[in-house]
Amino acid sequence: MKLLAFFLTIIFLPAAAIGQVPTDNVEMTAMFDADQAMRKADFSKMRPDEMGKVASTDATHRARTRVLLDEGKLTTGTDFWHAAFVFQHGGEPSDYLLAHSLAVAAAARGRADATWIAAATLDRYLIAIGQPQVFGTQYRWNNGGPTTQEPYNRTLLSDGVRVVMGVPPIAKQKQKLDEIVKERGQ
Image (cartoon, rainbow, N blue to C red; front, side, top):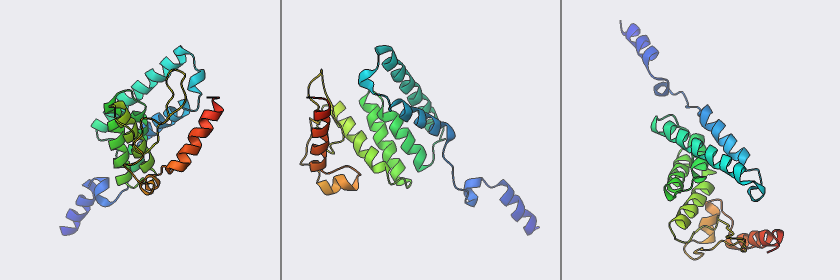
């Protein structure tokens, strides 16, 4: 009788309870891949209708990702990492804050490379709410003006913290900014 109870218990236990490792959500991976493929284009050369299509696709991806989150269908570090990238392409401070939280969840689930997106989404959120970025991941150019990282609080964090988060130290950021300015002829 005990043997029968043991076999019945094993048959009816959920897969996670017996040690099956969760797999990445295929739909989330496909949305991430599409999101990244769109970002290979040079946005400065896109027509307004093309930019509108990107914005519309981004909104659709965010809405579907929210459903997957709400339904508990995103479980792995990679799922949360993918979702962070989708939400960082939002347009509202809440999108960036959610992206930051998802990146932290990805890191907590073992996705070590999620630290960079956690830093970048925090910077994007801070700028969106009118505060200076602290990691230096965001480069902007407004109305044809020169490329800048401003507003940027360079003193809050040490370069050691930046490096731990996968962000280059300030000197390397300055080199990158100089290269961007040179390439754009600013």
